[in-house]
Amino acid sequence: MDMIRGSLKNPVARFMFAAGIILLGLIAFSDLAIDLFPDISYPIITVSTKYEGASPQDIEISITRPIEKRVSRIQNVRYVSSRSREGVSNVTIEFYWGTNLDVASTDIQQSLNQILDHLPEGSDIPVIYKFDPSQIPVLSLSVTGPMDEYRIRELAEDFIAPRLESLKGVASASVWGGRVREIQVEVDRAKLEANNLSLDKISAAVSSGHMDLPGGSLKTEEKHYGVRTLGRTPNIKDIEEIVVSNNNGVPVRLRDVAKVKDGLEDRDTIASINGVKGVTVGVQKQIGGNTVAVADTIYKALPKIQKDLPKGVKVQIVADQSTFIRKSISNLQHEAIVGALLAVAIILIFLGSGTSTLIIAHSIPISIIATFVLLHFGKFTLNIMTLGGVSPWCGTAGR
Image (cartoon, rainbow, N blue to C red; front, side, top):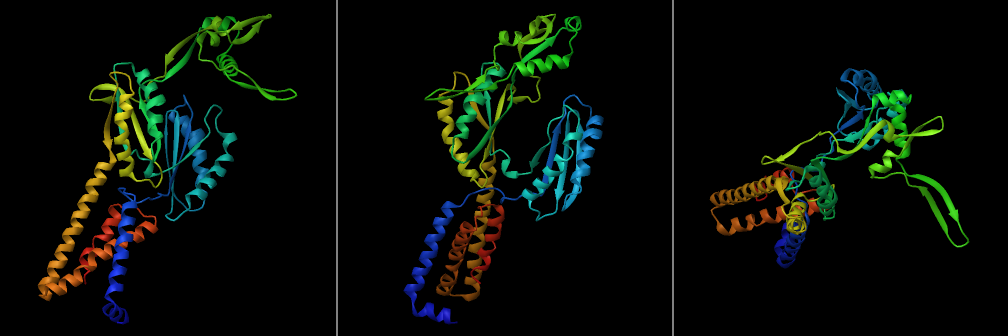
């Protein structure tokens, strides 16, 4: 009652306080990030291990089961599932809600370190992935053109993706589809046996002969130079000259037992846009970023990127997450306005006084605007959850 009496005795102070709330709320609203869902850390972690060439049965026995046994002992584990397929083992660990995933990831890594020596030779080191919905691409773009798939992918990786990653709010741009360059070594079995060599020895010789190695340092009175041996080269002729063994003092080079050619990796993904083969670029936003703002930034930058591309190459947006977000937010805003108007109409019917209704009704927008201040300082985003929570206020704020 004291607050009500004070407001009635000091109408100017009440007006200034309401104006301050409205101003602060509008500023907070303009700075709120817009997204579809709030940032949620799902308590799921996946351990992925690659072992090329291995069958699903071998993957299951030698990799999946040992990892399952280790991770199932970790605290707060609710459920462990796995999938073994040719060349890849995926073990998914689900924790109870409220578990600190950073601590859980550390525990998983420590458990995996204990079995690394027992994993098959030739398998990759297990990689830990957290399930993060914020890494779903905000936009997906297609790149097509009159050139071959290798050149299109090279253009997307070397030019388009870096330009997109330089934009504000963009975390990364991933390229799928197309073809990837690969230096292929086709070994002649007869020549291999004639020189008493094995595939392992050829592989080891190519690996050691095709790398840059540190060579120490060189000091002078005034300067200190770092020295390294340059062995990595894209030139096929240089790779052919790699020495794989010595036969009675005569070096046996790679070209003597194998044919080296510039080829392409086997396909693992195919991108087709309206029946035309090309590549797809998925753009991920930064954590906590504004999906709609990032999409708008990309839309503005695309004409400039398109202008700098070779003739005939076209970049198009094929999927836009912000479109659904805009429609969802717009629908919720419409429902909130309708709810507020209905609340005012009901109050007017029951009170029968326009003046009293206006006095009560003005509290509805003020209370909602004040909520935006709390959302801003609470680091919340404007999404269907927070707007869904604000909407009922439109019907109750005037009560």
